[in-house]
Length: 184
Image (cartoon, rainbow, N blue to C red; front, side):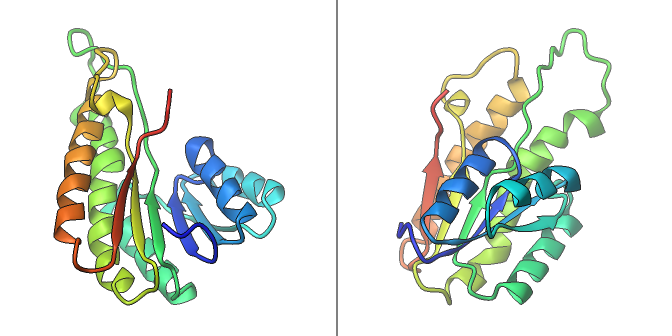
């Protein structure tokens, strides 16, 4: 992937790995758009990363993802890199939890549904861009799971498989598919 001169969208870019990626990519003279659910965190990122562009969105819903796609491609039609980074990790013990499915499945919606859906939404747009890429932020826990975080581990294993198959499907389109597995 070309590291400069891109227009990059990073989901979950206001904190953690997404924030670090946003900071480094801005330093390398990229236009960087970050989105997240918490407006206050986005404002803090604006204060600490010069030139960062922020958007409030919730990638846990299909409508949130569709609005994000529409807003980004309308306001930044040259977006050529999508980094699916938003994610949550929760300790869950299925022998004791009383949480309902809506709460339990939030990890699936954010960690797996969102990157698959956003990839699908952006593919046609990215095919028209120079040096396009889709980057999926995965985890070593998708390969070596932890019993404390079963849903997280399952979503990251599935994201790994999705990334490999998407890479194969897009091999002749010019869109680079990268799976980024950060160190612990």
